[in-house]
Image 1 (cartoon, one colour):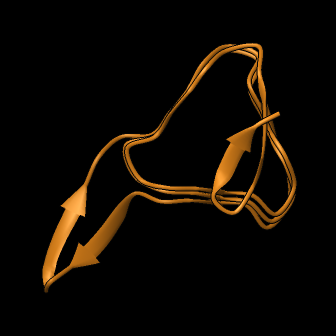
Image 2 (cartoon, rainbow, N blue to C red; image 1 turned 90 degrees about the vertical axis):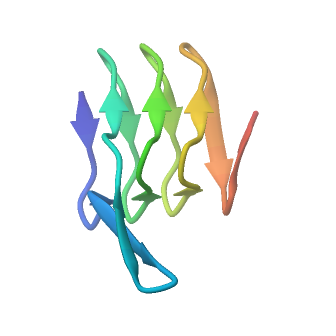
Length: 76
């Protein structure tokens, strides 16, 4: 697994005054690019690549062996 500098992997969020939590699961050999934000409840499959400065919205599932970029992320 490679996690670039300045990456934020969220453990919680606050919505309408309520704290919400959900695990983030990064499977084997996932790469998260510099400056990316990964919100709660995200699952990134094995060998998934998240490009630099990308935003992964809460409760998103990313396929393994795929590349995602953008804000919000989209598959290349």
